[in-house]
Image 1 (cartoon, rainbow, N blue to C red):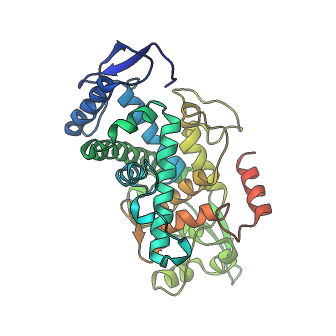
Image 2: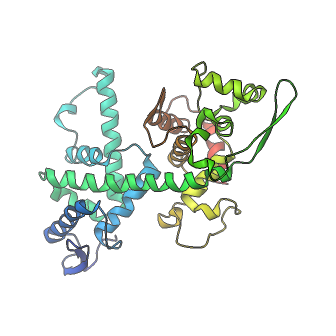
Length: 347
């Protein structure tokens, strides 16, 4: 929302927008109307009637959060920590030499600083937040309310992407022929429409998903005897990760530029309502977008029947962070590889 307007939009508890004259900044009336609306949405699963209202703009921004910052952020924590740092670091971090902190304390400080970074980003994306944040000081209920609202809409976006991608993911996987150690040819195909509803056809219980979950360096070993390899995974005799391939490119385009764009040439616009990239003016693929797509795709390829932060020895949040650190925020980053890979994603 641009600053400097002579009229500032307000909304009532039904989500209707109304105007009040003023200097162009949110005042106490705007603040009270906004939080009255947020309070009213709790009884209707945080739904908003008017997408152009201030609460509607908050909802839209919240839906971008998992796609830009990862699917694991608890926005209640982000807002709470962000408010606690409003006037600078809380007392527990003031005058603390980071070198003297325990490993656990350093990790907590690192997380707090990350939450503050996200909180500041929210205010940059939606400027009226910069004006209402000072009014929230000392109002803990409003802090929890805003965090709960943002968290609900953020989670809804993740669920939307998972549901949509789940429907089409198998369509993006081409049948593959492998030749085993005996020279015998075997075709590995995705499940048909009826089989896709059964999680027995996913994870290492099914060859089509297993081959996608296998790191590229172990692909030849897998192809020698796919079923034996899968049995060894299920019985805990291998440590596995996730490989990168054409499927992830299609999955990312599915999420950010719409399912209809997946098989179109890059830059070709799709029909229908604006895609996520257009709605949020996203003009480049960033490490966080890749990590988000990889993490969702891995979840859908697994045998889990629902979204889970942990799947046996696999920790999804750690995995997401590790993918991001392949590109940045790690002293061991291969900068040439990172630049080349991002260039590939953006080509």
